[in-house]
Length: 273
Ligand code: ATR
Image (cartoon, rainbow, N blue to C red; front, side, top):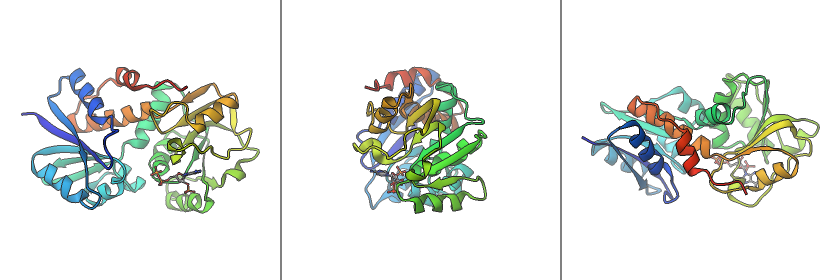
């Protein structure tokens, strides 16, 4: 029988997940159906319960339900607990297992696909919201020299530092406090990729040979990436690889088979112009 999976979000029309998972299934010979569900804003739990009760095996969760996804889990995995959010659920024997693969997807993309090792590097994460919370520990696991988190409101960055203090020592503050510092990897985990706002990053924030990475995908040259390019950064990337890598983690978790991500990333890559 065909096993059923889905992605749930609101809105969901833009989601590439059904196409990505269909490509994985075809390449690995897995008999699955993967659909997109627009979850009602006041009915996330009911929608998920209905899907699981009808035989659904697992579900990906996107904006704005990632925190609720963690709340409904009977068995949250450590990645989801520490991120405070889940992006993948698995239904098994009446239990709901929850994972957060966003950060691992990001790290896999940076290291495996872009060829940048994080070990010993100075890493700057811009933004202190959910995307940053998911990224911090998978990055820390690679043993960078430093993880700095800068945010428009410095207080939110400091709060994040306190929440993670048991696991990692973060340097936190506002953008102005970055004057005089430079980084090997600069990540944009703010939502500015979806608007036209540029981040007030000081000149000199990029070390020689640095990578500038925007976690959004399919937006071409975002204001963050454009700013990096203008400042002479040659290595720029958006989050298409992260999207496909987190999908691959979920696929393997559900199906026990690791799909090849390279052809799928190539298919969904939008030129950065
Ligand atoms: P997500 O879950 O995608 O991380 P979020 O939790 O709403 O979304 O966080 C959005 C992040 O983008 C925050 O760090 C926010 O900064 P503030 O905490 O100061 O609001 C950041 N952000 C959004 N718009 C921004 C802008 N125009 N300039 C700088 N940072 C911005």
